[in-house]
Amino acid sequence: MEKIVKVIAYSGYKLNERPTIIITYDARLEVKQIIKRWRDEKYECFKLLANDNNVYELKWHRIKDIWTLKKEK
Image 1 (tube, rainbow, N blue to C red):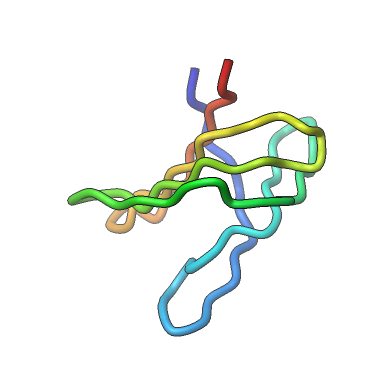
Image 2 (cartoon, rainbow, N blue to C red):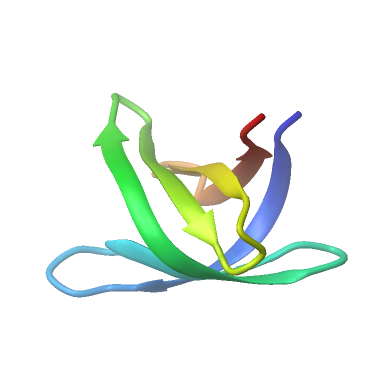
């Protein structure tokens, strides 16, 4: 299940280039490693390893400026 989260991201040559911290209602996760990144018409997508040693899929909707997070199984 995806949930809306707040993300602190590095912005270099483009906005929200790389997520660094993910804030949920009950946790603050630091991004240890970006495993994979891709984009489609609406989203910038990241598969990442967080400091809780779980793998997540993080998406940023570029037009709505909304981040969503889903834990990988």
